[in-house]
Length: 582
View 1 (cartoon, rainbow, N blue to C red):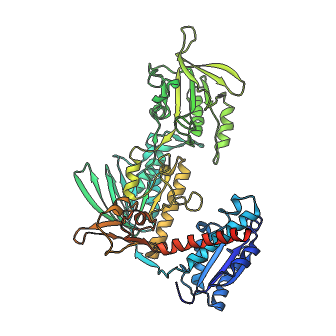
View 2 (cartoon, rainbow, N blue to C red; view 1 turned 90 degrees about the vertical axis):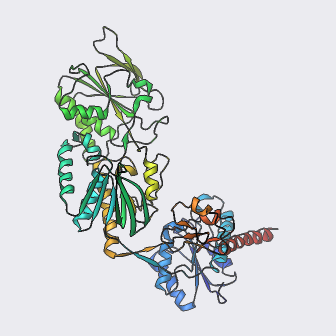
View 3 (cartoon, rainbow, N blue to C red; view 1 turned 60 degrees about the vertical axis):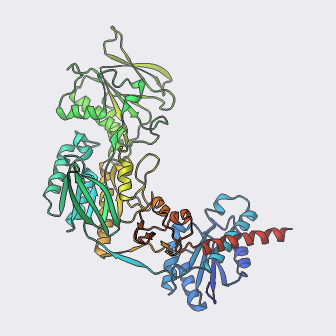
């Protein structure tokens, strides 16, 4: 703790978000009497420009060397207030934030109790900030090359965007041909453009571009390094290795189709004319719609949500299935005008430009729409009788009419959902990113940073982040490319400073920290029998410090003294409140 610790306390109203449940004036008045607190103020919106200007002015006029702001979540505005401190000439890490909105006002209904809790949290922050230390920014140089994993529409779009800006791109595709899911698609919805023409046009641009080096039939086992300074070795059959160095990574590995064999009601694999949507796409690409016996089908049923939006398989929506089914219905009516086409759906989701219009247009073409309850009872495919005039029957409880119906079918198309590749976890581990419960890669923030990840310099685009259509995949690809070009043009980037550090004298060389580190930021130095922290890789998560059996590892800005002082401050306030009540 500095001998002359001068703390400024600021309690935010957040409009009425905090003030309606916390007596902010009482809080500021009482906590202004705590040791080392020089001034204590409230303001309606501390994050506003006037609120920040107030902090800057007070620092300069009152020689403040510590600041505590009691407001919303640090995740939202911690950087805002750190910048305010820096603008006032104070080290930005001489700041502590107390969350009295999400952790107090928004979760309590008793104003008196909420006010008490707010006091305790703020008292803990005041006690903690006295032990903060100045941390200096660190930067690293950026290698202008970019590695892209996946040669589908998203990966190729990102590659072109970066390459057109004059930067080197390494595009790695594990299959023999670029194109991804587009290789299996005939027409795109909702305007029925040729997917093959689109794919070929983009592939030609990619393979002919002087700044893009394509590696087909190649895999990346592991990416080493940190933002600006990554490296890897790509392998072809493990026979040939090529070493690459680059500054950023884009993961665009896509998804795969759900296998419907586990859904007994649909009889996939039992009846030859029950096929998946991908198998029907192949039929369309060949230009022939027919049954396995070579006959033109008279009755075609299209079943939605196969493997999606169902608690027994995948609860999420695969997003593109409904629109693809509507596309199929239009293609069927064009190819076989006198056919009977049935759309069996749980819910029709036709979001996107031109998609609702396609739904309306399809409904005028004699297509029969029948609704079933996805969670109650799935439609069941059975063999038709000799006098039914078709090969199969679908028995279902039609939700809108409330009646049991039978649908004749010569051909049944199952709109299978999309799911993660089997090696998604392995790929994620190789680049240092995590998976959600559905095995999609997790973005840094679902709203504010949807293409970045918690590993700086690694971005996720397209279907590997979650099911989406072509326009959304391309939008994400261009967004990630723009982010990367921004860092490349700066030529250097700031890296995390709240990192772990190891005390060599205390380290016993057990390597526990090496095993638990999620960012591979720790390594073992055999000669000295100690663990060493690569601070460029470290994200300051604290896992190593909590696992270290001999206390050799600490985290900057989260030292034992800082954490314990916060707990002590909080408990002292609680104790004072109890004494005053009694």
